[in-house]
Image (cartoon, rainbow, N blue to C red):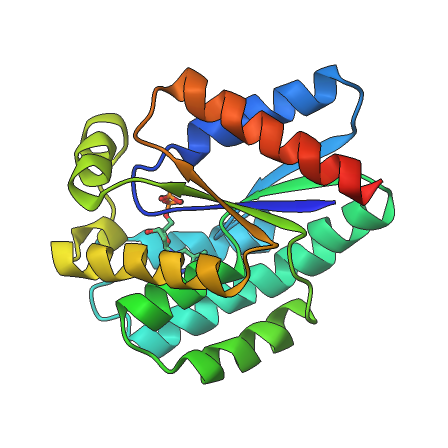
Length: 206
Ligand code: TYD
């Protein structure tokens, strides 16, 4: 089963994803955790280019192609083989980040992006996508305190508002796949809610 975590900056994905992995492992599942952009050797080299503060000249089209290149590598090298072995794959961001950030955030054509995603992933879609939803000022405040500032964080507030609104639209379009969790709750509450959503999905899946 393939589960992705999505959300705006500072939504707590990097805390909640390992917590879910621990829980699933404790109850006997074979779990693989990965993240985007990155997750493979080649993907991490691409991530470096994307995250460098001094790469201010990176054009949005170049940026998309780099995200998609890293994703294609991740699908081939990690996600598909792990799914074939019956593992649960947890991925911190996936194709929906491209739709939310490059599509809704930067205003690039959504149909074009969907076609490119189809090419990069071979059509692989998550079984479950958890949207950790937090309002933009709260998320950005958290991120500034707990993580290093990178090039992508430096965009203005309205960009992040568009990203968040885009996530809501995506979640409404595919309610079976998406589950929205209020990430402004305490980490323990968020964790418990995620566990219960995942257990429901696993019960349907197996
Ligand atoms: P990262 O430092 O991993 O942030 P986070 O913890 O929020 O995931 O940086 C990932 C950044 O890349 C984040 O700002 C979202 C952005 N991104 C895109 O714009 N498009 C994409 O397709 C992906 C995967 C990420």
